Length: 145
Image 1 (cartoon, rainbow, N blue to C red):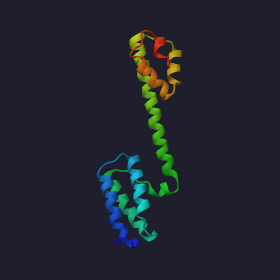
Image 2 (tube, helix red, strand yellow):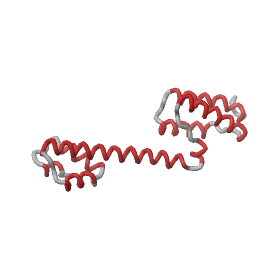
Image 3 (cartoon, one colour):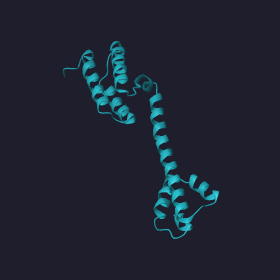
């Protein structure tokens, strides 16, 4: 293997990161791919600073976030999990708003209790209710499970 010597791994590792940034992956996906690259292509400590400096320059050029050292400390995992949770919460919030708008459009203005029920619902309940409203003839039909 021509890269058995860790010192020769810097160039191919940087090439992979450049390509990863070039393709413009979602930051969460990019971090997962980068995690794999880092696991597969370890560098000696004295080359890590050079690698990080080059990646910082690339990041500024491509406006892509790079968080490797923080990730090693475990912070990036929390960030990625937070992004996933945030997306899930945003999805549930969007579904709640959509369902409430559909109910108001189909059945007219509703009491605040209906909005609270919808806001307290799980993602699975919201999905069911969003499908139920398509066939509902009265409000109670929407909330059947």
